[in-house]
Length: 251
Ligand SMILES: *Cc1c(COP(=O)(O)O)cnc(C)c1O
Image (tube, rainbow, N blue to C red; front, top):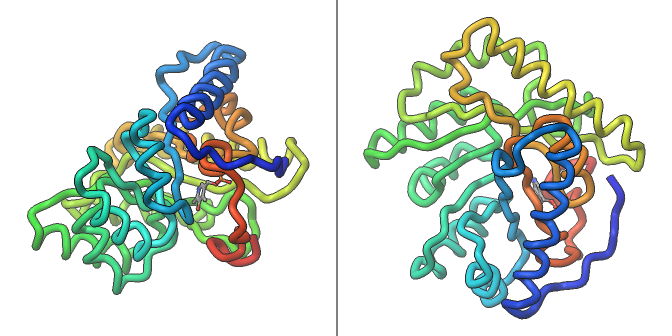
């Protein structure tokens, strides 16, 4: 939403401070709406951040890291295999990368096509693993964004039990990129209403029904609107030079 300049954290102490600041804001937002701050998971997103700085962040307390691109995530998970970190892929998956995700990721937050579900399931079955997934929904109505249109969510959910290696945890969305807090909030509310409706129709299809929503510029609004997981990159690691359009077309 707002695009602050975030200076890079370059020491363990700086990472500790950043993490504490973000957690403090999450807690304040949760308390404003009567939520328990401990119910909100902070997923630090380390895309574009070099491995030496990721090591500092892990030393400062990060135990999970989100990455948008599979190749980058795979490389980092291999080069940082000595660290106790769980990797979450939060970006669009090409089916020819499903095997990689099945090998190193503990979570995939951007499921929006049955072809990807089938490819992941096949690779996971072969590896004897399972994977937590979030169904990505396009709540902004911008057709350049990834994610299912809201009206297609029920039929999509109904197909997922066939893929027994996938454990559906809930939903993920990216809010519209705007400075209008009302528009951002509307995206988050829409995701929550989609979750609530799915829960009424068939709670077994959505697992715990988590909402993954909110990034550096809008995670406090997301927490106010019920986010169970916020995906925060720049506010922890520092501003990225890579434009968002590299990660979601039209962004
Ligand atoms: C990069 C990214 C984020 C984090 O964005 P920041 O602006 O760095 O907080 C969240 N979600 C997804 C899908 C991303 O690709």
